[in-house]
Length: 153
Image (tube, rainbow, N blue to C red):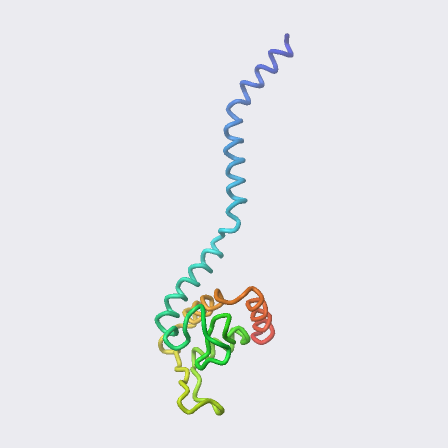
């Protein structure tokens, strides 16, 4: 009888704890589910979205969009069909910042790349690059990341 009363007393004492444990378990599960939604990921997505708007306003008329084009296009396409992914970030940033004059071997009427140093900040240039990279295949992004690691240290 004493044992039965102790068990009954423990049950009454534990009842208020059970909902708290359930809420805690739900909170832990929710935190685990949100690992993919960290502030860093949201910031990357926001940077890509900002880059999309900047690209549309400053680059799309010459370089085109997410599809089409050829690796030999002048000006080059920045999508997976182009060759931008062959170059490291530091080179691309410098090229956007300072432009590119007419190069020997290109047709005389080939357009030149204007400098954007007075129009885009370095952060905006990085946002444009983040957007462009969304058009590349996983293999192209991996290759370009390795090229960047080697060249931009």
